[in-house]
Amino acid sequence: MILRIGVIGTGAIGQDHIRRITHSLQGAEIVAVTDVNAELANKVVKEEKLNAEIYGNGHEVIEADNVDAIIVTSWGPTHEEFVFASISAGKYVFCEKPLATTAKGCKRIVEAEEAHGKPLTQVGFMRRFDRSYRQLKKIVDSGKIGEALMVHSAHRAPEAPGFSGDMALTDSLVHEMDVLRWLLDDDYVSAQVLLPKRTRFAAEGLQDPHILLLETKKGIRISVESFVNCQYGYDIQCQVVGEMGTANLPEPASVAIRSEANLSNEILVDWKDRFIDSYDVELQEWIYSTIKGEVSGPTAWDGFVVAVTADASVEAKKSQKIEPISIPERPDFYSKSHVLHY
Ligand code: NAI
Ligand code: NAD
Ligand code: ISE
Image (cartoon, rainbow, N blue to C red; front, top):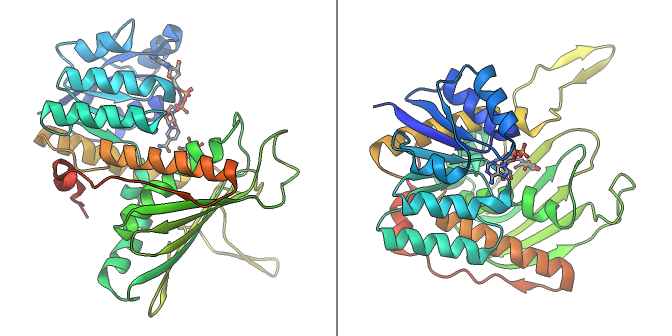
């Protein structure tokens, strides 16, 4: 079976996903697209030589008879509406983060899926598909370093064009909020946000860097540095400290250069390059599991948990106190969806 996909939002990441599905991955084709910027949708269909219908809005894409599954890559505030409509139509949907801009919105999606009777939604947390994170998880799960006690991690980007308000927490650190609970097989109980000396490279009125401190149910303490104007590169770090050793996220492969009395390795500067393989694996696995009628990646429940964590982190930044993170028990309904494919 070839999965026939409709894409809502043909901007930066929508175009990337269309390209990888059309030119690199197997088992799917793009048959429908839409964008509020109709000119852009037209341009993408032409440039990628897609055999796809261009629709006037996302709902028409979702309702199209020849569309089996939906990819939502429009702006964050539009996601909830399109995911909801996909569930109502009984169609599988891959939604870029955020699932919805509020925890309430995510909860409504969870409830809609429960009412529908099976999970249909996967959220675009691609780090779970990243080879280096999967290698790190294998070591943590193997018990080689004993029980995990602490995690030190960092999310650094050279600059943050278009960032405003608390986007460092709600747009970028959401990836850590998702991948660390997956890595540790745990959930968070509290958040605290420290505000270090501000870099002069931050836009006016924006705090940068941040340190997010999370505590988990098992008592693991996590520090996440967010530094989105670090100038030097896109650098994702993660070290798990266990009872008997430590395990570090592998660095992206790069050529070690010995030259002019220096030993050096390139540091990537763009998140697209750092996670390029992860997006491929993420969407290939989504295509295969959708054809099988399963959700095997991050679910609507995971999208909800991240939204609750992000809300508590923003609150902790404001209050400068330790804020509780209240995550209800995961419904049995979602347990099966955590299957990992190595
Ligand atoms: P973008 O602004 O380049 O593209 C969004 C597109 O959606 C635009 O072309 C816009 O015209 C269209 N759009 C907006 N509302 C729409 C609607 N109601 N109907 C149809 N089209 C609509 O944004 P970008 O960077 O592609 O981000 C899109 C989403 O992907 C965001 O939610 C973002 O958080 C997420 N994202 C995820 C990444 C990841 O690493 N997983 C990386 C980058 C973005
Ligand atoms: P973008 O602005 O480049 O693209 C968004 C597109 O959506 C635009 O073309 C816009 O015209 C279109 N759009 C907006 N509202 C629409 C609507 N109602 N109907 C149809 N189209 C609509 O943004 P982007 O960088 O591609 O980001 C898109 C989403 O992807 C965001 O949610 C973002 O958080 C997410 N994202 C995820 C990652 C990741 O690493 N997983 C990386 C980048 C972006
Ligand atoms: C972007 O939206 C993403 O999702 C990237 O993966 C992230 O690293 C970047 O900081 C965000 O702005």
